[in-house]
Image (cartoon, rainbow, N blue to C red; front, top):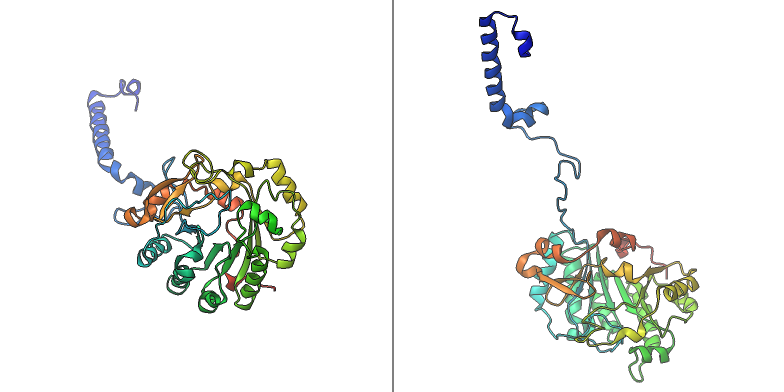
Length: 356
């Protein structure tokens, strides 16, 4: 009630109204902490209804990154010397097997569904036994939907497939050219051993032991004009990942780098022309420099996430020391770009229709 209205009332009534207003104000102050329950029609002690995802969160609230797909480069050592390599042999360190298993179990607990083992060359360590034991552990013990390896293929033997093939979903083999002279120029040549013949042999073993076969190619100055249509279609991989050659400071460019990849670099236009030439290859998955840089969760030999947003690999602390949730905050991972580049696909061989 306004004061103007109160002036015409008897003085005693006015005083009574002031007392009632004061008591109501005091009562409201007492009930203020319970106002959220009162507005929601709930009583103290009862849980509020579940909110929809994102509702009620303060602006700028950090959403934890789920490491759904992780690339574990457990070794930097390699028997090839590819001139554009962006994960070079700067250390010879490899975690003990049990420590690697512990880290993988932590990643599974944090939400990992796919693990990809890479290097360096994964089959150098104990002639493939080390990566084989990790593959078996991830599939048999952790029951991950997808376990894969990226390899140059030069050290894989059929006995490895006999022992570990059932636990492996995808084998990705690097092949940048179907011209052996070009492979030598790039750094994939190994004397009398023919990279292309070995590729054909690996393809057959994948068929024999029910492992999905994938092809990886880095498009660079030495192979950008090549026509690979016929050879790729004959191999019939489940996916053909086509990468644009990428510079990473400290790895393949700069003063402290072990490679000088500048001579391998191609323009975006050159890359697009290569893609256009192979547009009829249905399994082709292109990855430009822009798509590659922030769309991978990369774990190094110490199980540190590598952030490549500034053009070089900046490591987090190891997940073994600080846990996955803390370490992954420093990964620079762009989940939208991961999805945009087709990072989530049918990656378990149990769900694939393998047509050989």
